Length: 321
Image 1: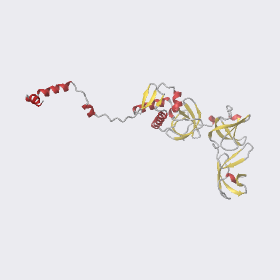
Image 2 (image 1 turned 60 degrees about the horizontal axis):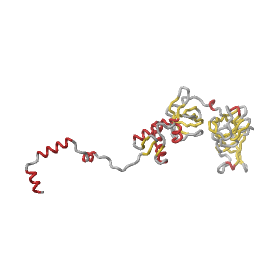
Image 3 (image 1 turned 180 degrees about the horizontal axis):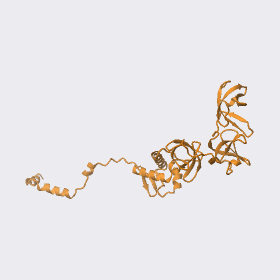
Image 4 (image 1 turned 45 degrees about the horizontal axis):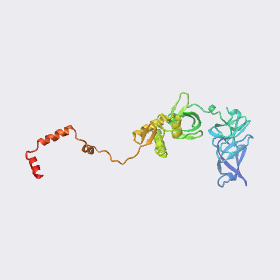
């Protein structure tokens, strides 16, 4: 049976000069031979995606869209009509989103979060931007410490709203991010905790040690690229730190403190600097003792030795002169 909006494996029942013909149930499907890689024969199975348009026509193609039925994705608006919008989901025809499925009408060229669903009235696959209605609270299938997949669908000042495992609403705080992150990005993340509300709190790092390692590398690379100096310090505005290093100010302060203790950087009032490497030999305690200036007890010891000299020592030294 054909699964609309999903990947299907269909058997070829007939081959014409131009098309492969499939029969699943009462509805025949076809695909141009030119759209299939390699030579096929009757009885072979082809993997492809089945979908329908506004006229109720079914299509079978070997290319998958960016989101299947029941999945989320960030899509670009290609056209705006009085009845709705059309967005790019990687295949033709474009995905239609009725005006009733949007809280606000986005302008052409914008990227919007979309959930792909089946409209029973229209009998076709459509999109909706009301994704909150389709995100569910965390359940027993997700727990702290687990690796997960996320899609960033909204960026605020210090927090990112994300879709976790194509199912849950998640929150990613800026203090758990090192590197540039934008709407539409797909990332591997780790579940930090589950809130009572059902929100999934995630981080891009398994633990704080991985986060600091990434932050140290970022700061050192940026210092080297900028000639060994960055005009960032404790009083820098968080937005300036974020724009320069793509990390929160909290992570930045912790990182430069560690780099300073490692003697890799210098922290001054006007910024941070790479620590110059020197080839001076390590200090030797023996060498330091040899160079030490005589103290008062050294003088006492010297006089004691002089009094113990033999009486003829001075006369013999005079004759030698």
